[in-house]
Image 1 (cartoon, rainbow, N blue to C red):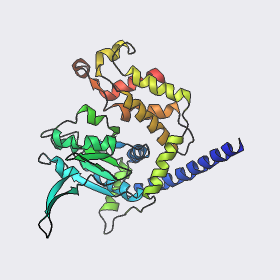
Image 2: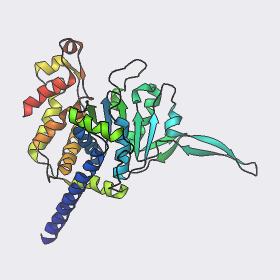
Image 3: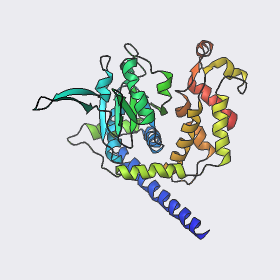
Image 4: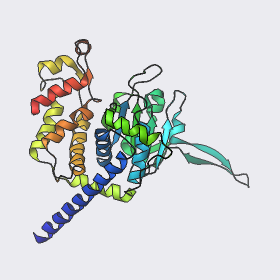
Length: 332
């Protein structure tokens, strides 16, 4: 019993120390990214949960800068891909090329693509063709790729931060549901408030811009991700997660409004994402266990890309977020 208590105390101490460092990390990111505290929290939640995030916002809201800053602060090797209609899968994954030695012997050699990094910034991912988008599917889920029948493992950890512009849809290819489901969170980025934009004006138009410093190493981030999975989750939180996700699916468990409004609902990966998300959020907030309030706060980012509305619901002015808000009322 004594050894168990000592082990528990050690984990608690590690959680408290990690939470304190995460506060510093948020402050460091906030030196560069202004007025987006919620976005920073959600993005860190996705990474601590070991997942990927889809950032949706108008141009000029520092989506790309956020990814670069996160790579610096968390000690991750980051690369950026600008997705365009002519981008090919080999431009992401890499390709085999034919080498010839001095003796005339020929052999294929694999040249890794930009996906071989720890933090991949997929800029405007919906501008690439479905064939190219699908090149990321295996990487995002299994953390390895297959080229010419040969498996190539990706660096660890591996995270994708993808961006989308919600305004201009001409020349874009909507992400398939299977790929959307690979994102732990969809994070909507709004315009900064007046005071934050005022600070941004002075900070970014002077002779010197603020830069973020590295506060974590890759190993330390992976240790924090492991701590997230050790955080206990109470039965009330588990019940709230299951009830929320299951009520969002049309069928016998759903009420008339959901059956009329939702064409397809979230699968089991939504429950997994909520479980990881509430644990990560608890650690980020310096708490030793998540609460039902965490479930309610993460419900929209977890569910909004995992549901589709019927035509009649859209015609009545409903949105995914309004439907999720309705679901949250059923468990609050």
